Length: 79
Image (cartoon, rainbow, N blue to C red):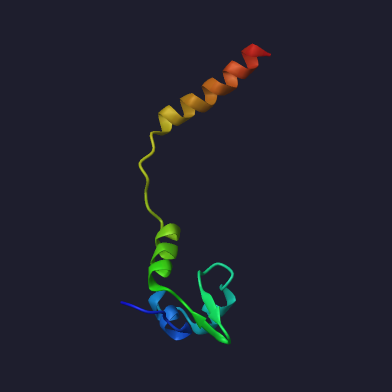
């Protein structure tokens, strides 16, 4: 896809959102304004969606807790 999307196309690109929803969230959504037109780059919209998608990142909770607790214990013993 080349070129920019208009408001309706961008709303559809973002999962069929309404135009009014898109306009109310403009402060979050990457866009450009050319005179009185709002333009949306599909590449930037895809990056916007990817950044906000819920992906499960594997986390070793035991290791993380050990680091946090160990740091707290070190501070207490140093004081």
